[in-house]
Length: 102
Image 1 (tube, rainbow, N blue to C red):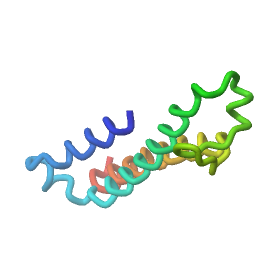
Image 2 (image 1 turned 180 degrees about the horizontal axis):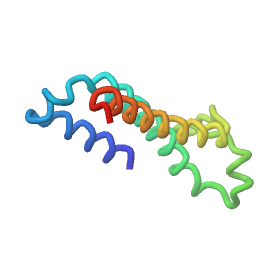
Image 3 (image 1 turned 60 degrees about the horizontal axis):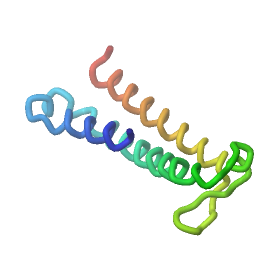
Image 4 (image 1 turned 90 degrees about the vertical axis):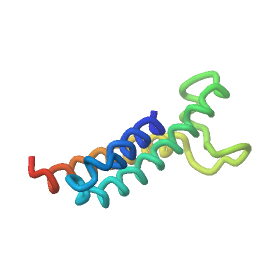
C-alpha cells in the first residue's frame, strides 16, 4: 500500500504540466515520502512477522526485526507505522494548504 502511495505521489509531481503549478510543494512531498517509507518499513516488518505468532497476545509481547534480529517491541513498531503514516498525510496536507491556499 505504501509503495503505491509513494509511486502515485511521485507520479503526480513528475507530470510536466503540474510541475510549475506545484513546485512549492516539492519540499513537503519529499518529507511526506520519507514518512511513508518509514511507515512502509514498519508495516512490512509487522505483516511479515504476524504469521509466526499463534495469538495476538503473543504478538504483542514479541520483539520484531528483520531476519532473526529482535530489535523493537511489536507495539512500538505499530505506533511507528501509524505515526509515520499520519505524519506523512499531515505534511502533505500542510503543503497543499500552504501552496494552494485552500
